[in-house]
Amino acid sequence: MRGDDQLWGGGGRSMKAAYSGVSQRPVGIMARSPSEALEPDHAPEPPRGSKKRLQHPVLIFLNTFITLLLIGVIGLAGLFYFVRTQFDKAGPLTHPTVVVIPSGAGPISIARQLERERIIADQRIFMASVLYFRAHKKLKAGEYAIKQGASIRQVLDTIIEGKAILYSVSVPEGMTSEQVVERLRANEDLVGEIAEIPPEGSLLPDTYKFSRGTSREELLRRMRADQEKFVDQIWDKRDRNLPFSTKAEAIILASIVEKETGRADERHRVAAVFVNRLRKKMRLQSDPTTIYGITGGKGPLGRPIYRSDLDRDTPYNTYKIAGLPPTPIANPGRAAIEAVLSPAKVSDLYFVADGTGGHAFAETLADHNRNVAKWRVIERERAEEAAQNPPAAAPAVTAGAATTAPAPVLTPAPNMVQVPLPEKRPAR
Image 1 (cartoon, one colour):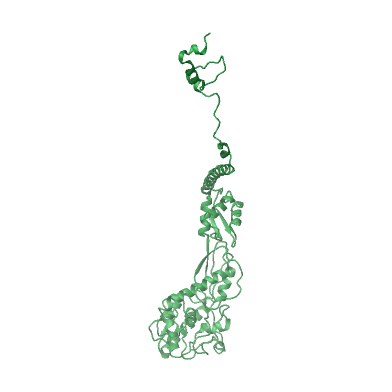
Image 2: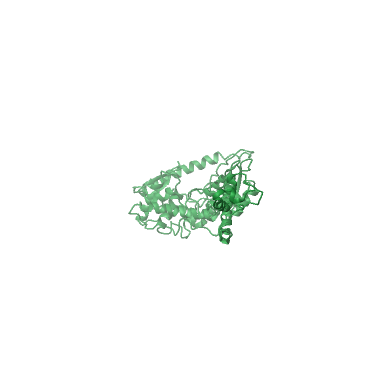
């Protein structure tokens, strides 16, 4: 064989030197291609220090944190979607029902109750919704009608908005405070005890609506607040020449008007009679005030007024005292209060029953006595008719039928008032 110098010719040494740095392969192994000859025999070493940077604790922590954060965000998004779906999903109720949320119940207690009564499927979804909407202080006690298949959203909205089933109690005009309290105590839809009888005349008669579980004390507070609000609204509209100056005096006089007549078309005129008598310093001589002095507001007298009743000394006997009694004798309604603050523009000083359910009014005592004489004739005729036609026995009460027994006719007793009472009496 030829030597290397001979193989490369004259420039053999220089060419050998040029290719010697490219690849040093073992003898006998030839490169398959020129490009393969250019490839290094092994991977180059990484730059000094790069391996340490990749393994730095801070970078590892950040990498782990970001990974966990992404996983958490994805998990929360999935949880939110699940809760939102369950929030609007139809509930388990298979028929309409009624649920009573007791007063003072908290969100957890309410959630447990709703799940226990199968109104919602999962109390945790309900609690999550309460927290999300910040409704923990907006849940209201009451009795609620829940429709079939109601979702948690619908149930929550119903309780937050207080769309409770409402009951009502009617307080007629002219009831005393003690009678109002007895009516509330007899109502089984109300709860709680009444500590004391409200001041006479402090309640506003009306029909009051309430939800089951409302306390009797709370309803009484509403009645008092409603009366104060109503009087405040109309007080500045009153006539300016009235013979009283306070709201309390107005309520006292209104309670007398309320008990004297139940006819709306007479209230302002009856109020005018008492206002005129107060201006002239005349005694009011009102039968209802005398009765209140006897019964103390516990109920009706249950019999006619006797002459001895008019002679009795009580703070409410306006046949004996001058001016207004010390307190109202009942709870007057709106119309009676309005009547005393704006009485009719008449000069009447007397009135007496006319036999039609109303009254005959008079400016003078002579006219009044004639009206009284007419009323006595009517009374005698009614008494004679009642004696000739005694009321038939009430029929037996049958199931589903309502019966009304005839009202008893009171026949005059020997000491019952039968003549015109003392002068200046506005007899009914």
